[in-house]
Image 1: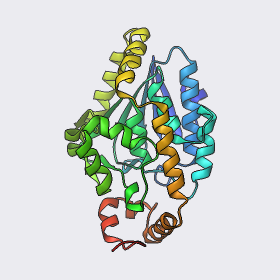
Image 2: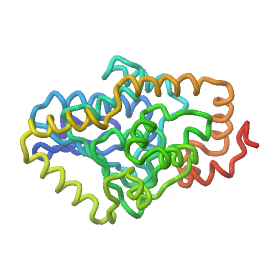
Image 3: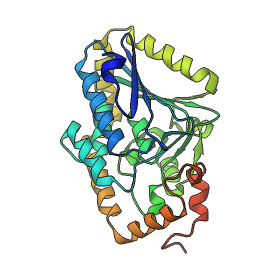
Length: 281
């Protein structure tokens, strides 16, 4: 696979031996909409079909946003794109597929990663974050919703019950150092060292036999990756919840206050506490 034949509108791809670097660039703020989901599906399918590719590294071309969250105005459309990978209209199924894949996936996180953006990096095998800029959040409960892409499954296994409940029920922002301490990421590193560290690790892993990577992932997943049915259940609950009239009113009110705009979402955790949304006491 070469950069020229793997490029897509929202993901710039380059190959370095058995490592594939995928740089996400979906203006205006890397929302997980149908175009980005489409290109993720295409990238995963091509990479899995190419035996030369062993490691897939995700980065972001936007310094402020790695993947912001889903585009709440296009839920049906991005679900339809996800179905092209798994047969199910669910990004939870897409993320579970990535976690179960033979590919070793690494997220190199700079900027904000919230909601399904957080669930996307949680689906990756490893996560490394820029200490100065990475921000994490699972804000769906602020709208009365369960995260639908696997956050409850991953965070509870990574952090334990109490911290997973804190993260989700607070709907707040967490910086890279606290995310590292809680187990959300493998390590928080200075931004000027992050790329070199991730690249070196990716190439080191890719230098070893693919058979070893596959069997290690299979056995670790047997212990730590929730079954597909659990992801499916969370996805269904999110889909039911987001269609609820009260949730729709809260989403619409938040959109009027700046949800899905770059400036308002720079400090979304703080904004959610300030905004008066329908149902707030």
